[in-house]
Length: 343
Image (tube, rainbow, N blue to C red; front, side, top):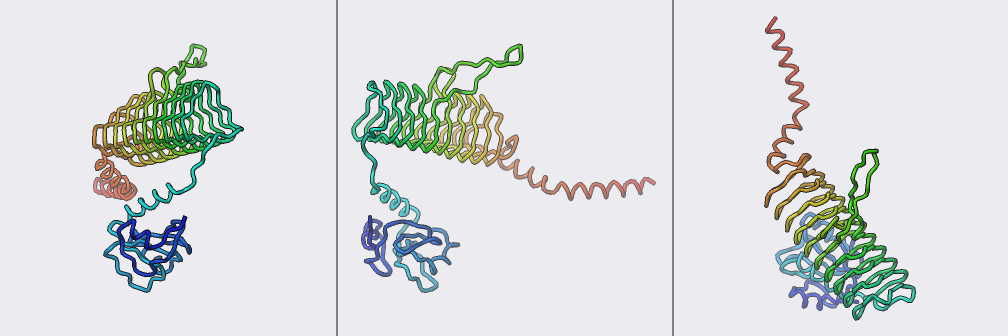
């Protein structure tokens, strides 16, 4: 789909500097812009690329004044970041939507599908599954017995949803996601082997949740593992059994959360964080990358390091740690001087 500068300026309430008939059909970064693409300048350090970009149209701030000649047509707007988001959403909505049920899909006669659903090749939908309207299930997915999927949810190739799981409305599950596999529960026996503890609960994922590729969320031992509305999880995340993650919490890649831990709402957890079992994390908590959490964290706290410390304490400790080699050298010199004085 093509858009002219005049159309885009009208949508964004912007001002055109250049050719109002310039046409674009895709979006690009300013340093990688090609003819026919729309780029944007949100960070001043990328201004150098404005003068060399091949992009046809570039969004800039209302107050921006170029220092050199610009070949691209400029559209000046009040908030470039928000305007880019609006355009990306509009462009995404204009993309063709997959529809229809593949003849190569296996759908049990006891399953129910709402209107406008798409089910791709070699996907399986088991008995008593309930699929809402406009759900998209891409090829090679598995939807188990008694699974419920809310309307508008998109399930990319290779997703596996075990029996009894509940997925809300307008969720996105990227390729390779596994929902409802058994939690890691084993009891040691006297002979050194382990007895498997049955995992009889399920997983509940509320509305507007997005799960990155190859993320795994284990079913509960009893009751439910719960991912609250608006949660965004990156790729390669492990959520253990009976964990609860609060609304609008965001986690970066390779986070691991052990069983029965509770994470509050509006938290930010950076990459490769590990959280031990039976820990409670408050609301609006921020945890720095590669931190290890083994104790409860109160609301609005910041944690870094392993074991994780309060933010300012960690930074002060790290400042000392960096100086340890010099401090060690000075200590040895002082010891020598003291030894001479004692002589």
